[in-house]
Amino acid sequence: MNRRNFIKQAGCAAMGSTTLLSTLTQLTSLNGAMGKQPSNAAYPTDYKALVCILLSGGVDSYNMLIPMGVNASGDNGFNEYKAIRSDLAVLNPIALTNPQCVGFRDFTCNYGAFGVHPQMPGVRDLFNSGKLSFISNIGTLVEPILNKTQFDSGLKKLPLGLYSHNDQMMQWQTSVPQSRDALGFGGRMADLLNAANSITEVSMNISLSGKNTFQRGQNISEYSISNNVLPNNVGFQALPEWWGNSGYLTDLRNATMDSLVSQNYANLLKKTYASNTKTATAAFAVFKEALTKVPTLATPFPGSRLAADLLAIAKIISVRSQLGAKRQIFFVNYGGWDMHDDLLFGLESKLPVVSQALKAFYDATVELGVADKVTSFTISDFGRTITSNGKGSDHAWGGNQIVMGGAVNGGRVMGAYPKMDENYPLNVSFRGNFIPAVSTDEFYAELALWYGISPSDLCYVLPNLGNFYSYSAGHYPIGFMNFNSTTISTENYPQNCLTY
Image 1 (spheres, rainbow, N blue to C red):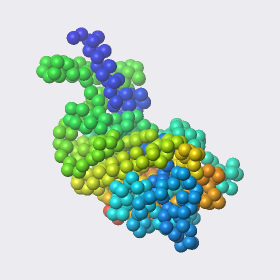
Image 2 (image 1 turned 45 degrees about the vertical axis):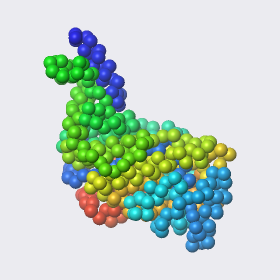
Image 3 (image 1 turned 60 degrees about the vertical axis):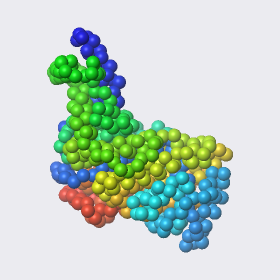
Image 4 (image 1 turned 30 degrees about the vertical axis):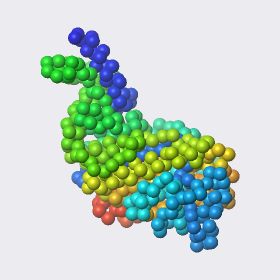
């Protein structure tokens, strides 16, 4: 073995690894040692985790949550739904038991009874047991838009690239819809709280789907792994294995790598590459040791990739102490939702995957004793048109999303499920395209407060928040989280954020 061959093989192994490729393509630090400090300079001492599940492609969420029954005004929600959805209508939804429909701001709750797609009994059971809620008609907004007249006026700021997959997927991850170059919501939170974790080699942000915008911070990058979480396979092979990877050659290899990445390079790119390579290798070693402590989980998981991703997250949570983690943010992308045709068949095959995986993951958090410490939620590019294109539905705006966990005020439909009517004030198209009643800022602000972000730091985490919400004690943006056991530091919190 000579130096040239060693560098060539080590370099190929490194660039072929998910973690290093994810990290090195953006020149930021994995551990964020120089990251932004929280305003109150106090780090949390308890454990909490957020799990973001991106349903990329734009899920048709009006076939995921379906109005049923007759409301106080005498409107039959299911009849209105069937009439406007025509060939897209799901005819046999499973009813939710006594859903509490909570209106939002000036928007009323248009229907009093709801059901879910028949392939989502797991979601039904979680909802009925008070562990899951829906946030209705939520989407990207720069500022409130209250009706079609305001939308048509041209006086309101709209998200860039409205109805574009790339733009809207990005903006759901950043909550800065007027920019194509913003940091991610999870990344900005990690900028503030990453130092709460005692082992700095492992980022607070862990991705099961590689590089993503959601976890990109000013000083923090995601640590990417595969779902094959085993002590000797933590998402990538840190170094090539030679002849059994033992003995003298292992010592030689490690010493050589330490020498290579410890040099004081004059070139900034080389310095950053070396620093991130060394940090990623150190993180691999920490993970490898921690995962030897993963307990055997009794909770059964189905065989889907989404379920495998969530099972991997459950395993990582189980060794949070070995990883020195007080705060963790996980990211998963489950795609394939752009159903311009074959919508009913497509949802029949994909919605049960989501339902079964969510149910298994929640049950696993119960088994691990952290159900009230882990909050999971879905996001998606946008909602879809209520009317049919003859085969499926097309790109629209506001839609319905899921939030799940032991700290969730479950059994609720919160926001403003739109009335299935062309004359509904938030409908801006004859196709049934709804202005969101709830902004991503309000949704994320509630998660951030529960997660431990001080009100004084909300403006950094969510720069547009002042257009929608100003913190006051006991007043939360939407109301889907239970704050009874959460301590919120209100030291020097601002009344209003400065907006872009």
